[in-house]
Length: 167
Image (cartoon, rainbow, N blue to C red; front, side, top):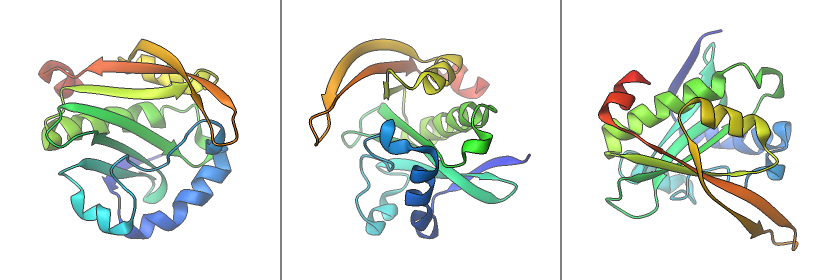
């Protein structure tokens, strides 16, 4: 299995919904794109506001991973990942994709710290995030449009130069 990341392209957008439905992402994610993305025109901001990669296995796109900033010039990155094939979950693809995406975000965006939120029920993701150096830094509850309350963890990781070159 040959895993690689490449820049997310407009042609990948058509797969987002199918990836999301294939793994039931609606149960775990509020957004399946970077925070700074709302339309295909926003892809021109790649490398300025965010880095977004298609995760490929043997040259087939199977998901995406991104790091973006909440505010321009911020050195805090927000991580997101969507792997859209249930048959390959739990095989280390997420961990490898996350570490590569963070390394690139450090190089391209100057990120020094990375944060994410993860639903407490998503134990597989929490284990993966911990395995690449994230620690729980807070917790809370968000309310969905239908009124459902979802408990979540905030997890963070400092990205030192030493860590960035190691991952």
